[in-house]
Image 1 (cartoon, rainbow, N blue to C red):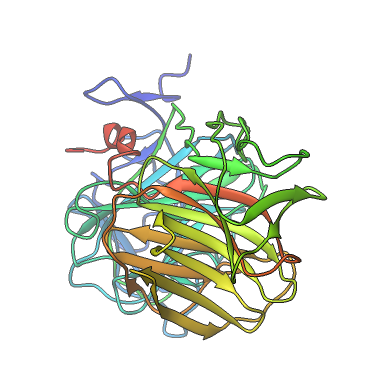
Image 2 (cartoon, helix red, strand yellow):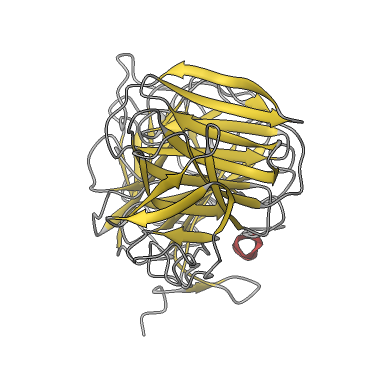
Length: 401
């Protein structure tokens, strides 16, 4: 066996690729060098000699005079096969730096990552998804990023001592790109943000799903036992809390709507989660319900055909926290995040409105809410946000984790 194929660290962990930038290289001399401690070989595009390695970091002196993503650009040229659960990790120094930079799996060895990525925005703290939609605001601290490959797309995580309380949180997920092989990359547009470690462990980390349902059966019953990435999923019993929700044509639909809504839920085991469903609007609309306590206390996110709304209901009184125009199209996905006392609403992978304050809650039931009998919901999916340490296994691959 080639001794450089895998490298063991002091904890006997094995890596497909690893670069901790423990060598010293002047700007203009990084291309073609070996990752340290390895394995991996570096490639850079750096026409104005901005990239250097020193003091344990890959450092950029900023972007080109005429900025473009990927010049300066950094890759490890060793291909990574798309396998479910494959991990890529970055340690970035988010202190005293600014400007735009992308981190993630690139589909090729040319400029500009377009998917499977975090975009660090120009304010120096906001991390966005591949499409540029703001997902998370980190503090000025050393931060770990992690990408876990799906059969199609990625799960994207972040960990910061302050910004996430030292736990790994799922920030967003994508489900479209199926490119393989992929290449570890960092593309700079205008940033001087250093990278201090890149790691691709040999072992994989399948991501657990809290609930998944594509409604491909006759009766509501329970959620499915297999998740969206063919992982095992808990079969959770649906409960009609208000009115009656059933299945018709492989979609969830309300058949009885007393007063003005029908609600069905499943228990998720955590009140901090990312929940989504695809909507085809009928007369009024439908959406997702979070943290259901009783008929008078919960949070919900729905689309009325014009606006996406995030609404808190407390003691029977409703307050629209988000009520913002979002172009409707049949089958687009609504999803909402509940994280402590923070709530966020997304439609078609775009954040709608600002992060809002929602009531603190330990109630875990989530599910579907309908305001008519002709809207349908499909592909109900729920993941833990990570507040309770659901993704702590990622710690084993970082120093001081």
